[in-house]
Every structure is written in structure tokens, then in C-alpha cells.
Length: 84
Image (cartoon, rainbow, N blue to C red; front, side, top):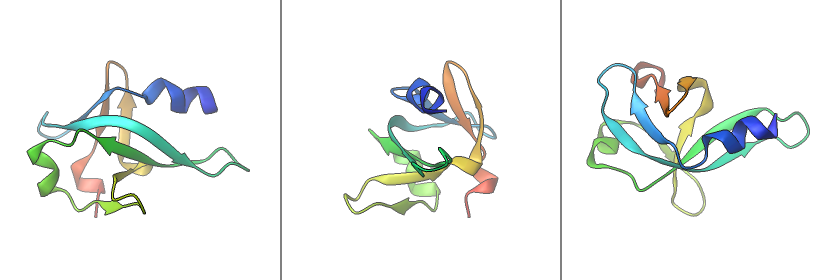
């Protein structure tokens, strides 16, 4: 499970709906007991991030809920609709 999280590191986060880039995956938050992925920590945010309602962690880093991740390949594709 952890290798899946590491595979995301450094990938560009892109909107499924519009193709806009939001930033780069800088870290992953997960539950160590179960390996469940919770959030993608966004670094190098672009101006498009302002259109999303993202929580921030204690270090003021933007958090993208893992539930919004649709696919991972060359990019991490997220659904803007699923970020409330």
C-alpha cells in the first residue's frame, strides 16, 4: 500500500473536469494502522487552487482529499466536483 503512496510523489495534480493544474504532490497523509490514504499534500500550488475549497494541515499545506483522486498515471487526476 505504501508504494502506491510513494508513486504519487512529485506528480502534477490536474483537474478531471477542466485539465487545470493545481500543484504537485509533496506528501501523503495516511492511517498507519490500515494504510488508508487520507489526503494528498499539495506543494507548489498554482493560482487555480483558489477555486477549490481545500483544508490545510498544521504546517499550512493544502490537503486534497484522496477520495477525489480519480486516476494516477503521468499525472494525479482529481475531480473538482468531489471536493466540498
